Image (cartoon, rainbow, N blue to C red; front, side):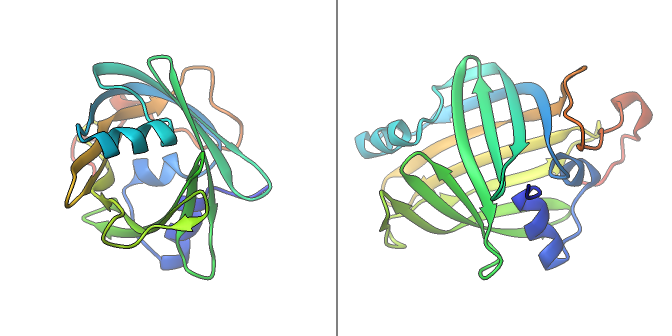
Length: 199
């Protein structure tokens, strides 16, 4: 069974990420939190979101994420208030990218760090195996970081320059009580962390 693809990409590049980000990507686990979701309005954007199985809009949406390993990488099951999105991820050692598949959509994701935050970009994309030209694929506006309470936070966004926003979902996650899968190190309770944690 392979480890978390993002952890592999982070280690391969020697990136220094915040402790909550490192812990989230350290192994299998179940996480819970809240999120706000907004979606683009263009008809082509809506079609793409439907193909990828993206969640509907909502505020203060309960989120549950289960990360499990498989032979090639990991499977992420995201439950946004009852809407389930599943993707499969693997680390491509030759390119250094993380490959993520949502149904017929495949993304090649790059990783960098800014101030302890993990910044994720879209380096490539294909739909039904057909490569999407650079000018047509989304531009990622995605960051994972640690907030002042030491929680793992995500701000996942994408836009297409000539179509506008695609989707954005932002919020926080913590290990689910009594549900953490063996092999995933616990993020310490908020009461035991300083408010000055790096982001």
